[in-house]
Image (cartoon, rainbow, N blue to C red; front, side, top):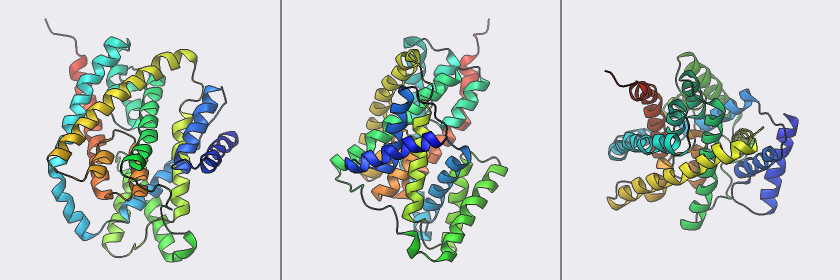
Length: 339
């Protein structure tokens, strides 16, 4: 674990020196990826990784206002497109993994579904899929999208990704910091107790949102907390490649990279349709329909100054659609034909 932190820290330093975007997020991803390919043994800290996701949940919830919540009803037109996109991704993705790369049905199905990594691994394992292949495929999906988006945001829209994601902790009242801590820990544990998917991020988001609507929580988490969250999320993505073999790179990672091209084309198509019909702002649409990890997309939306409610609402619906629909669809499609 100490080596993993040192490698991730070195990545942050290199990205800072090279003046590359999002050093606290992309630095650890690249450093841990390179170290994994060189054979370094790395390991993250599960509790800390979830705690960092809780910080992001609080950051999103703290932005909620009555006007913002009311405005969410206006998202229905684009929200309806989310299940359609998930269905289309599955329709193309399952044959891609099964016919082109020779994966079994369970591995192909849960590799194609753009859901949360842990949920897809759990469902895939229960269905008899290859858990290691699923882990590498989803880690590659998240990594490619998270790495590509900052350059698109900076190159196309000129978004300044170097601005601090918040104010220094020293400028915030202690009472606000304690409320954030309470929202993060209590929201996470309550959501976990009731079995809510994505408990570590959605629980704190809901509780912090209620506190913000009640006028109790008036600030987002400080910059230091958001940087820490980026660091651990980036490190988590990179360490998924620990122990990767040449054969896995040639098959699992290569298959995932090809699928990323397919995902990008499908997502771009939906973004273009929404743009043509002027249903939502283009930058928010890109962030909302990019099939990356929920935590990673939250980080990018926060730093880019996007409409947080819009982006998160679409990602929550995407994850919900996959989690609810994936096991049912997998059972239906994997049944042998009846005589």
